[in-house]
Length: 462
Image (cartoon, rainbow, N blue to C red; front, side):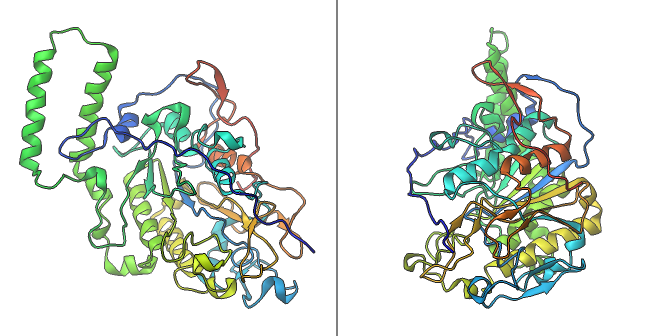
């Protein structure tokens, strides 16, 4: 049996970095304050749908996580398919996960696992842009469509005094060339994600845009703000354009973001006990999940856990070709490493436990996505290559009926058996949960009405 592997690498222009236009002593928070200000684009409303979730916690693991060694093990397949990774029972009879996922196996009753997810392309850029937007974008337009987090921010706005769309840390840039795919595109920069940057597991972690620059004290910051207030009062008698008014009001909201104690507290992961931090794991994914849970607790509408790429040690952790340049062990050894799937298993399980115990899981949709799965066949380097024909994702909370598996793959995990669910379907499912009608028309920058989600049908997880 032969399988397709990677498509030739194509190059795309690097997206310009988001330039916040407000800088006060190194503070750059203006873009995140736009949605708090309530400055929305026009939309042609459709009847609202009944929402089962108030917020979304998006677990984004770009790179193509293997489904064979996680949520779709194939114990009956030949050894060259399943290898040394065994299947274990979950707490739902008849459903098995790979042995490296024991914690999540105990929470299968909270999850709806989709085993026939397929992006239809083995290209990282195309598949990631498709998963992040729900729109099957042409190769030359990967930055042309807004993330679904930006759409939710646009339609539902912010809550809790926090940015509507927060990315933890929001630094993933696949390449070459390294390209930021976290874009609001034609919705405008005011709906771009607020990216925490930094590394929550490190002792010196602080949210870059909520910190004062070196040698700028709170007193000095207040003095600068007072000076600006005086200048504004002198300008008050002069005629100002609507754009300038927006700028001044935006400045006020940005200052509020910077100085509000509850906002700064939400980002303070050190407020968590050591026991809690260790329960999530002191791994990169563990501490990012914990920070995202704090943001959901504080009222963030859409919090994204961005796993990110690991340039240096092992390149992209999930792109397990195991090529010599990647410095990765054999696939079946790699998946047992504490920093690989075991770290994800521990972090995701702790997240579901905490949300369930606090009662927030009922109104928080948790969705895990990766752009595609991996080939059933192990390559000559001991890895699995890109595979756009099948993969696994899951949903939990927010009205999701737990304990179910939707879709299936063939005996080697190569192709879907029955219905295949696309990224458009996956994103439509999120919109349904938060009560957004995908037929709603948004007027874009060219003053043309475009539907929020032109294709796709919600996956029946509810």
